[in-house]
Structure formats: C-alpha cells, structure tokens
Image (cartoon, rainbow, N blue to C red):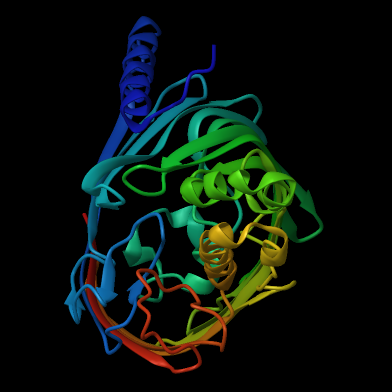
Length: 414
C-alpha cells in the first residue's frame, strides 16, 4: 500500500517526531533546545498586459495582468519555522507557509523532517526536505534571504516542485581550501497543479555537490524521476478516440509515468560589497513538457543600506514546439473539426514551453534590521510562437511584444 505524504500528514508526522524527540531528550535528562521564527512578504505587483497573467510559479498561481492590473497575490506570503535540537545528534524542523496555491491561500508544509548526525561529517534526514537543485531553493519561501523580489521565473518556474518526501544523506569533506557537501536523495512528491489536477513524481533520485572556497560557491546537481501530470486529461482522452494515430500522439506527449531528467549548475560570488550569481538548468521530459534550458545572470552592489541590482534570464526549448498532429485526411469528414480542435490544443501545450527572456532591475533597501523594502522592474518578452511563462493566455495575446511587470515588496523575518 502506497501512502502519500499530504501536507496534513506531513504536519501530523512532524508534530509526532518533535514530541518523540522531546520525550527522548527527557529520558536522557537533557533539555531540548528549540527556536521558533517567522517570516513574511507583503508585495504588490502591476502588469501592463491585459491578455495574459504573469505568475511567479504555476503551482502558486497568484496572477496579475488579465485577472487584474494590480495584485498582492503574486508574491505575498507568511510562514513560521520551528527548529528543535537535541543531545545525541538529533534534530527536527517544521516549516509551514501560508501562501497562494491552486486552491487559494492555504497553509502548506514546506519542510517537515528529522535529522540524525551519524558522524560529525555525515548526517541523514527523513521526511519532507528541499531538493538541492538551485541555490535560492535553500532559503525556501524566505524572501528576505533573496537579493531580488523573486527568483527568476524562467529558471525557478521551469521545475516548480521544490521539495521531496523521502530520505537524504549529506557528507561534508574537504579538498585543500575547498569545503564540499555531497548530498544524495530519494523520495517522491505529490502536489496540486490546479483545483482538479496534480503533479506526481515517484522514484525521485538525485545527487548534488556544493563547493565553497571563500566568497565563491559552486553547485552541480543531477535529478531523475518518473513524472505524471493530469492537467490535460480531456485532450488526451479525445485523441484516444482517433485510433492508432491518436494513441501514438498520447504515448508521445502525455505526462504519465514519463522519465524526467534535470541537470543544474550554480555559481555565486559574494565578497561583501557586491555579489554575482549565475545558474543554468536543463529539464528533459519525454512529453509535451519538452526539453528546455533556462539560465540567469544577476549582479548587485551594496552601498550602506541600499543594494541596486540587475538581472537577465532566458528560457529556450531544445526541440520543436509545433507538430502536425492528427492526419485529418485519414479521418471521416464529420470528425475532422474535432480532430482539428485537438491538434490546436496539443500545439497550445507545446507553445507553453517557454521561449522567453527577461531584463530586470531593482533596488533593495534594508531600512532596519530584519526588514527589507524592494522595488523591481521586469521587462518580459515571450518570443514569437510562444506564450512564455504566462498563464490564462487570451486570444488577443501577442507573442514577441514585451510585458512590463512592476513589483514593490516588504520582506521581514522575526
């Protein structure tokens, strides 16, 4: 019997783990050390495009543009984190975030795991953990830890699931002046993609290595899983009605237990007065999700409490984003209109593989300890034939035309 770790089960499991750890600490006559902290982002975004919605993440679909010229739902969220450290090398963490989901604002368990330090250099965890793909993913939903309002959507939106329910192991080792952390993980994830659809990944296995030397940090990661996404089920059910040629298209494009491979590389250099970050990732999926590469480059300069920064990001497919579909000459005339509609629907899915670039600039003002006010300007351009990362795209949407998104955000930790 397979048990899916839903947010509710993860929360219950974490409470049980924390209670067991506290009991264990009591038996050993050692008081647990715990900390409780919170964080939040209050943001307002504006888009000048009324034919599509800008969203920071398709699985957290706060949107602005078609749904309204202004919105506080794109980036606003609040969270709390409980850390418990015990004697004899045990620790546990629980992070709950109240954020926008496909079903509206709701509490979501981001982290819920228990850790055991086998040796000073080797530790293992079980529960819900962060996948070590991109550098900013280490900070979870804590916007205060980021230099920008949000991570680049072309990169971080390409692989929306950020956590895994399972186990991982981390080993620290040194090579000369370079400190390394090598991490292995195995697990699964099951998250809502809409009010009626889900994203499921099983057999999720990965390896990552992070190297640090002074101000320089470099990470490389590999990840493999079997992915199922039931967003477009009506389309594929319709294709199955067209015999073998429809079934062949379903086998090629449907996201049902398909192999997905992800490779990422990250670099960060931060000597103090300024910083530079660059990341690139490639996702290969044997489905309508396609084969795509995304990356960004960002730099900023710190002057007292002010940090101006620049950002350039890009996403492109590594294969075709259009296809002929059903051969309408080979079907009865009365079924040709339905076949043409199915072909158009499949091509709309392929057009959603982002071909897009963004040029951004922003200013961070650390107005007081633990508070940061950020202003960011993004000029987002989906290339001709692509809807980019936009959602709720309307017939009047014009690819190739830049879209301006302005955002003001207040980040805080406490």
